[in-house]
Amino acid sequence: MPTPYLVTARATLTEPGLSLARVVGEASAPGVGLALSGGGTRAAVTALGVVRALRALGRFPSLRAVSAVSGGAWFSVPFFFLPERFDEDQFLGEHLRDPAALRWQGLNALAPMSFAGAVGSYELGTRGLFQGLVRDRVADVPSHRIWSRRVAEPLLAPFELASFADDFSPTDFFTQDAAAEAAIRRENPALAAFRCHRVRVSEALPRPLLIVGGALRVQADSGVSALAPVQFTPRFSGVMGRGCGALGGLEVGGGGVTSFAFNGAWESGAVDSMRIRQGAPLALSDVLGITSVYYGDALGDRDIHDFSPTLTYASPRWRPPAGAEGVYVDGGSVENTGVANLLAYRDIDRVIAVVSSPDPITRRGGDVVVERQVGALFGYREHNREHGGYCRYSDPGEGNPDYAENQVFSDARGEFLALTEAMGAREADGAPIVVEQTLEVVDNPKFAVVGGRRVRVLWVFLSPSRRWREQLHPSVRLRLPPSFPNIPTAVTRPPAGHISALAQFSGWMVEQRADAVDRFFSESAT
Image (cartoon, rainbow, N blue to C red; front, side, top):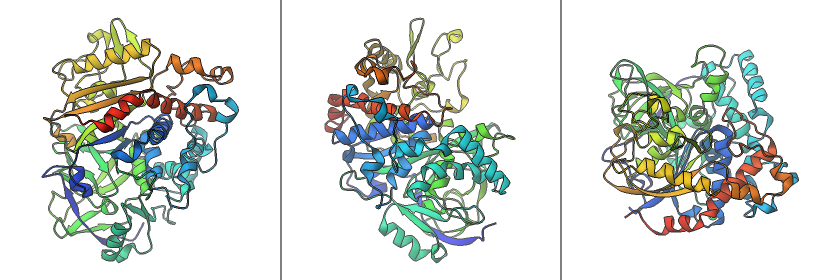
C-alpha cells in the first residue's frame, strides 16, 4: 500500500457558472468547441483524422475547447500532453486530401511513434490486452488499477506519459502549464518525487482546454444505482453538475478540485486551501482508464466492476473531514458524445460534434435511424418499431436508462427528426454525413448546462460514403469491408490498413464540408 501524504489543493465551484473565460482566464468571447465521442479504437482514429483535417484547413488553432469521451480520449490525452521531444507531425501522420491517391501498401504501414502506430500495437488487441490482464493478476496488481495500466501501456507509455511504482500506483500527475506545476510543487513537497506532465506548448497547434468525460457510480434519490458525470481537465477534476445522486450518504457534485488532488479525502481547510490526504495523485493513466473502462469490465472474469478504477472522492461542497471510496465507470456509459460537457461552458456557442457510431445510418420503415447517443441529447430513446419508432424518455419504451437525463437540446419544433432526415438525405446522395443545425439549449443540472441560449452544431456522423469509396484505387476498395468505416467497438486492434484508411476517411468527411467549417469559425450562433 502507498504511504499516505497531505497535499494542498483548490476548488473550482460550478457556481456562479462555468465559462472558458472564467476557467482559462481569457477575455469572454463566444467560441467553437470540438466534441469527440467514444467508440474505442474506431473513435480514436476518427478523432485523429478530424484533427488532421482541421489543421489542414487552418482551423484547429481557433478551437477553445475539446471534449472527449472514451475512445475520443484515447487520442486526445496523448495528443494534448505530448512531450516536447516527440514530433507532433510524426504523431499525427500525413493527411491526404485525395482518396484516389491512397494505396494499400502505404495504408498498411503504420509509422513508429505515431498515434496510428500506438493504436495498432499488439498490446491494444484483444489477445494483448488479455495477456496483460493475466500478467497483472499474477503480479497481484490491485484489480481496480489493472485496466488503467493496460490502456496506458500502448497509448501513454510510448510517449513517456505513464509510470508506476513497485506497488503499481502511478508515479506521475498532470497540470496545465509550467506556472501551475511550479505552484503545485511549491505548496506540496510531498510530490517532489512525482513526475508532472504538462499540456504541450505549440505555435502550430496550440491546445485549447481539454475536458475528458468519466462517470462516478452513485445512489439516486430512489435508492437505485445511478451515474454522475465527471469532468477531468488539466486545471480541475470533479462532478460539476448537481442532483446526480449521493456517495456515502452525501450528495455529490457542485465543483472540482485541482486535478492532481482529485483522488483523496478532504481533511481540513477551506475551498481555497483544501488539505487532502491521498496515497497517489490522479494520473493520466487513471483518466484514460476511467473514461474507457467499458473494455475492462467486458474482459473481467468475475463481477462487472472487477476492473473499474476506484478512487477517493470528496466534493468541495462537503465539509471536512470528508471523503468516500468511489467506483468510476466508462464516460460513454453516462453520455457518449462529449457534447453535454462542452455545453456546460456558457461561452461555447458552436460545437463540432464528431459521432463515431458503431452503426451506419439505416432506414426502418419511413424513419432514418441514427445511433442512440444522438437522440438522447434531444430527449429521445433509441429507435424501436414495436414502440412506434422514436419515443421520448418521458414515454414508455426501450433505451439506455443512463441516457434518460441527457437532453441538452430542445425538440419543440421537431429538431431531432429534422436532423435524422438531413442525415438520411446526405447518405442517399452518397455524401459524407456532415449536417449543420442551430439549436436551443435547455437546462440540464446533471451536466451543469444552463439553457436559454442558441448554439450551432456541425454534426459529423461516421457512416459509409459512396462518393469516397468510388474514388478509391481498386487495391484499397477491395480490401475494405462493406461495413467500413463502422468498425465494431469490440475490435480494439483493427488491421493496420483499416486504421490508416479510417483516419483518411474521417479527415476527408470534414474537408468535403470546408464551406460549413469556415462559416462555423467566422460566424457566431447569434
